[in-house]
Length: 277
Image 1 (tube, rainbow, N blue to C red):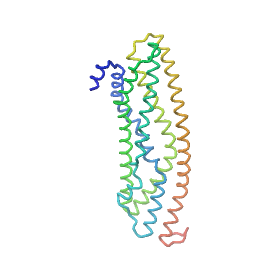
Image 2: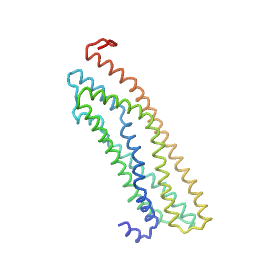
Image 3: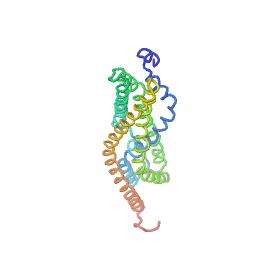
Image 4: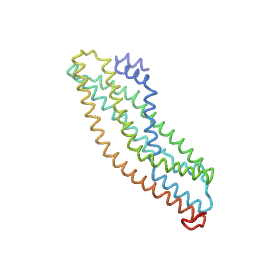
């Protein structure tokens, strides 16, 4: 199908793009794992608080264990908004690539061709959009695995419950850093990688002289810096507010949960607070 489309429309751009994606698919998939872990572990601080508060309420009522589905209900990341967020990625990358393509066309032919639009549409349809959907699958898969482990800890009873609680607290503290670092380490290189992919495809498909190639490279890098910079500034406003909120919640969790667990444990055992068992 790819060969037919490329032959039909003479889209060397699409052929080079597919070749680049095929050669680097493993590396691109590995790049998605940190972001998937970030979404999975750092996206639901309130659910974690709610779970442990409810857990101790159940212990007080004499039912210290949870079923798998009860835990899955609290920790599942199968939310409708997660795929919707991911869908904006290929759309945004499409417009970034469209700008790059139009710059190349304008410099080479002093006009803007509909061929570049067709090429970017096909690239988005067959490469970028499926990659975004594949990213959603990774996010959901890791979420299910993490949820399953937590559910197993809860089902095994009190001993494993405390062990699971310790792991959860460590994860919460770790996510305070991951929430922000992941954005810098994963999202920005992913955007730059898309820009590099488009640049390589255009460079290989366009018959440009050294002078035009250098001029095009300078213009392309300027546009890339401008687009990525503007995107980062816009996204940074949202991510900072999110990170600040999550960080405050996570800090409160790290302070509140151990105190609550300690208090609930001794109250449950009818032992005065601070006394030795």
